[in-house]
Image 1 (cartoon, one colour):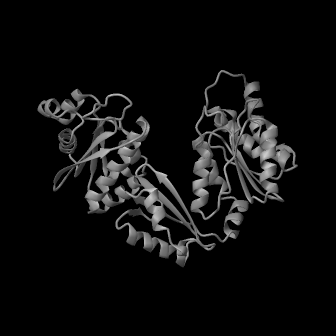
Image 2 (cartoon, one colour):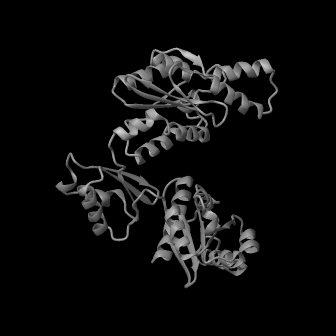
Image 3 (cartoon, one colour):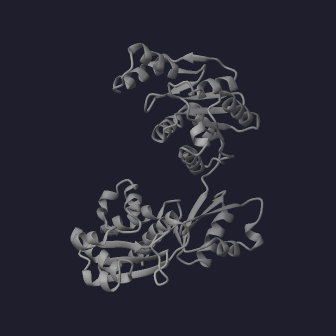
Length: 406
């Protein structure tokens, strides 16, 4: 459950619900749903009560734990579970310690009021160490277990990791007896092809649940439970789409790519134009990427393509920045100048303007320079500017993965 009027109205994008749901799914827990409610205490109380009365065994609530007047989640959860709020001395000490390191123009009295408000947790609950200044809590209710987490995403995830180490959550996760589902990622397969591949009674029965989610350039397939039928379906997909399954544990293409490069003791550098650093950002989101990713150049302007990458003016004049020739020169230039095994480049027209009949919006070229030479690929992508950019980044990473792994 995600609380906050700013999230409900779309002013702040929810990151917490997706992150907690993904972690629970990986632990074999079936997520019944994600609910968004405003800051009103009645809304939060009602949503928690509804979930518990519906038989939900674990209710995770995020947001509304700060010191301001509209941070009332703890009060709402206590009300929903019919217990009073009480000040937790241990939590208060941690909050005061955290607040002492924050420079604010507030009186000691005001700071003390804020600390004491955040130290109020439902009676009988386990307080969680505050990653920031707001502690979370784990409360056992006759209807289930309620976990309350702070709203800022990094605080929420850190607090969640503390929560799963508590006895109530360990017991709940251990008692479920559920195994993590099989999560497959396929490249180059569209939903219609996948639906056709499942047009067989073997894959439609009560003992097998198959979910599919289309992502830019990929399909994510979740199969549960992990049994003989699920493995038979995985083998069937292997036969139907040879080489399309690039991940069998839910890992993204950047993680798979990183493992391949690490195994070969090779390095990568990037040169991005229309994607503006998206590829570099995705790569550096992988822990340990510095072992195989040296860096990159965002060469949006032609002058940067020339100065930083050494793209010849002759190519830009004769073929333009959006061309196979430019993509090749960018990949070769960044590889040579930064000294890596592989150079990956992307240049294109993301729109909505800038297209011509000869070079329409969505035209993208990918260049890959490696030990055996340089190759380019032309892509014709559809959608708005952000979709073209994201899809170009994903497909470029897959083309590189295929070039490296063969």
